[in-house]
Length: 174
Image (cartoon, rainbow, N blue to C red; front, top):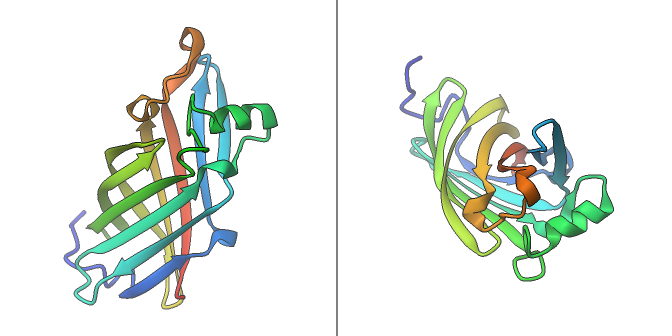
């Protein structure tokens, strides 16, 4: 697969905003090696800026940590606590990336992920699921080592240190 030199066949130039009604920020963590705890964040926002030169794009996203939802209220409260997101002191997760073409429908993304008062570099591939003059849909799957953000709670090692995040972001023109 050859690398494109421009985003023009992937994402049109301009500024785009996340459409939260048609987007999703989810996660999954193995628990006790056999079960997988799944959840999502219900409140988030973001922008995508594609320059006129079409060689790079910048994306910025904010996820509200209070909006974590695993369909288990007691677990959700624990995830909001200082053991994990520390939502009272750190009300948001922030992702900032620069993206470059990585194939006919892929963007190589590099940047930072800030959560619970810690920032770490992040790299992942965003796949273009759909693109038109009016909407762009990107999907990204990434592994996050939660211990890098001081989220080390795991009695007897029951919870995996690796959380799998899945983001499906539908961007529209503001």
